[in-house]
Length: 212
Image (cartoon, helix red, strand yellow):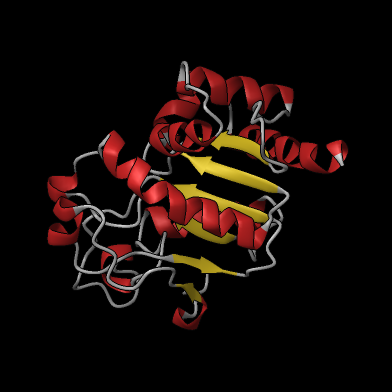
């Protein structure tokens, strides 16, 4: 089990942000990015889930105020980052607040939060960005004016070929990964073992160093 992150490493960009009224009303607290500001890897999720206020520590970003701190997805993603050789990664979400009724963030909400994400990337200047899930990947591609076509097939191609996505205007390698909640289901459908999946992601992340 990964160690629970230090709340003192939260990167609070705009306390009390109310750019999105529906999100401001539904959230318990803002789930800010957290981790090493000198990290080589930034891990980006879609948005914090509802969370579990009764959990001992891993209550989720909606209650902890830190991205990827749920008992299931948060711990799995942090374990994945460590397996990829990045135990000190920086973790954040494309949208920082929990959407009501666990719905997907709207395009307007993703756009409103894009400035926070761009600020984080400019501050940290990672060598690579790992996006977990379809919506997180689409959000990062949209920063470069690009669309996502066929998420699962895109992940499979990047993993098998050990390559990152075309992400013009950014120095970091952009690597898509399956959302932790659906990883087990989709790995069998794209005919990859988890060991092969992790190895392929590791090669894709290393493409950032090969391009330097």
